[in-house]
Length: 387
Image (cartoon, rainbow, N blue to C red):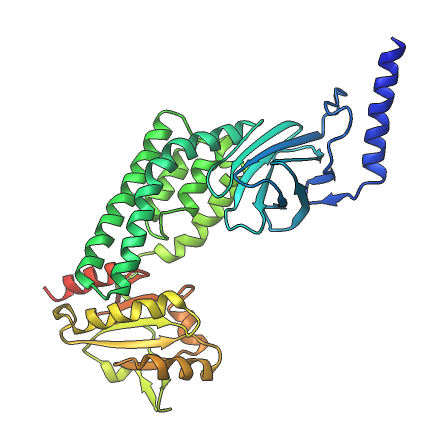
């Protein structure tokens, strides 16, 4: 009995020292107090807000781990040796954290709550966390739905990149079609998982942020609406709701919307007005000097421009650069072979350009036919117009 009192006294001293002397690093609802395993390690003191994270790293022996919150606030840098690390702290709720090792680009999300959390990470490969229902669901999703599709996505992405580099329009368009089929297959797999009630925060987060592009709004919305209320009200559920609202505007029907009648400066400082193209079908290519995807897409856009699908269609590239000199400098290098203008704030606002490249097609009646972010979809639209 006396020995037990001594042990509990030591435990209380460890906690007191952790609270009083170790640096307290706070997030919104979480405080990390210790990055060194105390002795004894297992604190059997029924404290309802203490969490302990113990981790193993394979493929690298030592380094530094950055732990940060979902709002990107860094909570702590943790050194690790012999593939082991540890940290603990206090939280009264389920909190999402992120894990980054040695400045790597693999961002791994996991959850903590009062209790023990265990992390296993194969460097630049596989990440698993246990100790909460959300972590277990995340593991399920990564091990089944994600891995089932990720290899195919990466293979297609690499092939698309190579086709673009080689300016092979036909292969590029075929690969884009295959990518679309793969995206739809992922959506189908996700719906099957929901049918089997194998859902969770991660399922929703992955659908929103990985692989699927900013399209498929109706499908995303349908998936969200099928989820139970506890998932909708979870961390990622709330994030998904915000994400859906942000993308809703991008996916509103654009047909029969009158095009904004701009008057903008060209590369020779001449004012070019929308009214000059009355009765013409127009492609607006919104881009920027700093946008690498825009610059990479230009050779293929030139090929679409010279393709029969572009017969009797006027192309106008509009830079959203804030500094005119940036636009002129890049324009001199690229030598865009059609109208090249620089936007004003009204044009950007009226066409709701919040990402580049953005391609907008306007018919010969002056109404918007389509707005998209893909050369493949642009080509399909033009093919329909010039049947």
